[in-house]
Image (cartoon, rainbow, N blue to C red; front, side):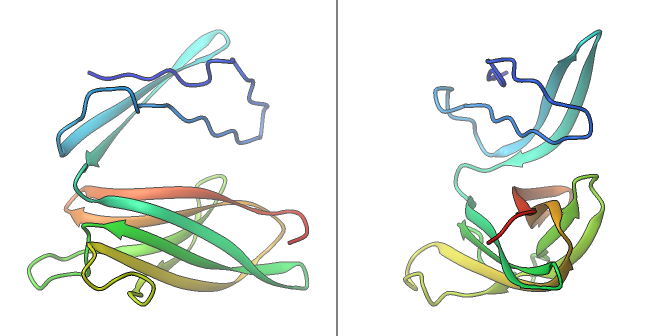
Amino acid sequence: MTSAPVNEKNTSVLRDSVRIFEGDFKNTPPTPDGSYKIAAEIDYGKEILEAEKSIYLSNTAGIESFEAKLTGKENDTAGIVFTARTRGIGPTKENEPRQIVFRIKSTAGEVMATIPGKTSRGKIPQNADYTEYTAEWPGPLKPGTYFAEFLVSLRENENLTSFCLVDNTGPR
């Protein structure tokens, strides 16, 4: 079992707000590829909240980068351009059904849009083990804060995912 401290400075999270905390696993022993469970215990004042999620961990393949950029601004709405780069995860093969999608979600977790990722190899050398995926969502994305997600289905119930926050509350 491996663990990492999160929120060591005991930063508060205010009601009806979102705060993202990251754990640092850089100094832990290498973990072999496979299915794992992530568990979190959150001291929320008088009670401790517990959460658990199954994940598939891969050291030989993964998501190298992911970003979601706001586009245009018309009548206080915007769209999003998604870009993600994977290592060791190529386009779908005949006998390997694989879903590669981008999503935009409300902070409450409601999926607002799901957009299939398109392969774009132009910026990466052809002999590299990297694949770039892109997609566009024209919106409308009203002012507010949202989650963008990149999801790669490896096998049944085994997914790689990356999230980022999209802040559409101020000028671009």
